[in-house]
Each structure stands twice: as C-alpha cells, then as structure tokens.
Amino acid sequence: MEEARRIQALPPYLFARIDEKIAEAKAKGVDVISLGIGDPDLPTPDHIIDKLVKAARNPVNHRYPSYAGMLEFRQAVAEWYKRRSNIVIDPQKEVVSLIGSKEGIAHIAFCYLNPGDIALIPDPGYPVYGVGTALAGGVPYALPLKEENGFLPELDRIPEEIAHKAKLMFLNYPNNPTGAIADESFYMKVIAFAKKYDIIICHDGPYSEIAFNGYKPLSFLEVPGAKDVGIEFHSMSKTYNMTGWRIGWAAGNARVIEALGRIKSNIDTGVFQAIQEAAIEGLLGNQDIIGENRKIYQERQDIVIEGLTALGWTVESPKATIYVWPRVPKGFTSASFCELVLDKTGVVITPGNSYGEYGEGYFRISLTTNTKRLREALQRLQDNFGKFEF
Ligand SMILES: *Cc1c(COP(=O)(O)O)cnc(C)c1O
Image (tube, rainbow, N blue to C red; front, side, top):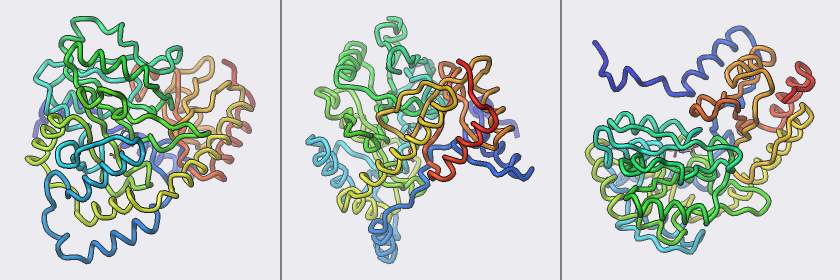
C-alpha cells in the first residue's frame, strides 16, 4: 500500500495537526481556549436556514445539481457583485459554483499547470495555494509578504525567468493571516504584471465583507482590466457564517471559469441545490448579518489589541479580517512561543511559520471566540507572563 509520491510529501492539513495538540491538552484536563482556526463561531442567519429547510423538502432538489451551479445561484452572485461594487458579471459565462472556495482554489492549478510550471504564491499564505499547485505537479514560488511593505508582494523583485515560467499568481486581500489590505494602485500593478507575463491572477477574497471603521475592501473584479487576467474566489463561509455549508464561487474571466468548470464537472457534481437556494437567500436577502458581524469582530479585535498592548506589544488594528498577526517576543521562534503559551495557559494560537517561511517570527490570533473567552485568554497571558520584550 505504498502511497503515491504526490501524497507522501503532503503534510496533514495544518489544522488537523493543531486539533491533535488541542485534543492532547484537553485529555490532560486543560480548559483550552482556541484562538487557532478561522472558523466563525457565529450562527448562520435564520432566514438562510429557513430557506434550506424549505428547499430540502422539494424533491426537485434531491437530484443531481447542474455542474456549473443553478443559473439562479450564478445570477444571485452576479447581482451581489452589482449591488456591492456596481460591476457587471455575466452569470452564464463568468461564474461557477464551488463546494466552498477551498475546492476551487485547489482545482485551478490542475487547469493551468503542466509539470514544472510555476505558481506564484503569497508567503505567509493560506496553505491550499501551494498544496494545490504541488498536487497538480506545479512548483510553488513564494512571494514574501513583509511587514515593511504592508504585507504586499514586491512584484519587481520576481526574477524575470520565474515570471516567464509562472502561469498562475494567487493573491488574497483582505489577507489571511496578516490582516493586510490592498488598494487599487497595487491591483493595477498586478494586472499590468499579469498582462506582461501572461499570468492568470487568482484573487481569493473571502474576507471582503469583514472590515472595520467604515473601510470597504475592493473586490479584485472592480479594478479595470481584472477580468482580462483573472478570477476571484469568494465564498458564503465568512460573510454569512456558513463555513459548514460548503458553498462558494469563482467569478471573472470567462475562459478561466470555463476551464475550472470543465475540470470540476469531471470530478464533482456540484452543490446540493437546497444549499444553493439558501445561498441565494443569503446573497440577495436581508444583509443585516454583515453589519452585525463587523460589530462583533470589531469588539473582539479591540479586546485583543488592548490585551496585547498591556502585555508589551505595539500592534496596529487590522482594517479587515478576523485575524491579528503580532510578532513573537524576543528570544522565541513562532513554534516555541506558541508551544509555551499553550503549555502555560491552555490558549491555542497559530505559529506564523505554518503559513510559510516568511511567517516565521509571527503568530496568528483568530477572532472566532466570544468576548468572555477572549478576555479570559488575555488575562491568562497577563497572569503568566506579565510583560514581554521585543
Ligand atoms: C476561509 C478561507 C477560504 C476558504 O473558504 P471556504 O469557502 O469555506 O472553502 C479560502 N481562502 C482563505 C484565505 C480563507 O481564509
């Protein structure tokens, strides 16, 4: 039963490993507070659930769904972009449904990478960009995201021969794990770079609706020229608290959408239609949840920033996302710091190097825990450590 080389090299998914550590601590009787995984703890709004319940009773929905997604779902995605960003997306040709955006992110590499072709991936970054690339036989090339550059990649530092061999570039703003944002001038540079080297841009934007103090993140697709060079992955998961439902989409360049749809139609058979109907309700129905989420995450972010400040950190409040990305104190690596914190306090934080080598020296706090537990987590840190040095 020897495994194929492509999976021998595959580490267990990041959070599978962290889950094991949590289970060990819990088995020892530790009251673990997890600030690890970015999985919203808040419930899906009732009106979306009601729609699912109703749609689940309709036998029409019990059959195989259409591969590309119901036209009504794709129309809802197009309408959502129109309302949000005043852009025109063709629901027939420029949208495909996904079984969560993770699925599409992993499959896009199979559409465009021949063995040895390069995909440019942000480092630190969501692990799926690199893993999908490697599974498809491609070679991930890291674009360092450095604090001094606002965690934006420096495109002019990509060597010419790498740029020529690259077929895909993954980008993700508002960014997981750094909380960084990107503005239009950055995206304009990205689009020019993509045109120059014939690279497809895969922008991953699941946090576009989780922003603070009136800041409104750009959708990549609203930047002029974006549709010429790429697509945007998006998802119901973070915006509507629907991570468990597994529904997302890709939208943008029609040829790329068609290719992604073609590979998917040979592997999966789409999303349960009742879930698509519920997602339509989510996209076009009452949008109060977006404001409610922002308020909740803002309050949590404030607790974390205040707590870290009291512990000796100087951290800026991220303008978006459900993450805070502080440096580790002097004398620690990401791993040694996170391990010490777990051992001493039962608080789980994610070591930055698990998002790539340029994440070393940082850790990630996820704001997916209620205010009471968050306060408790920061209190435990203060009780055990007083103040840190940097
Ligand atoms: C959560 C997340 C996703 C995946 O979302 P799903 O649609 O639930 O698969 C994709 N990219 C990033 C950066 C994420 O943080």
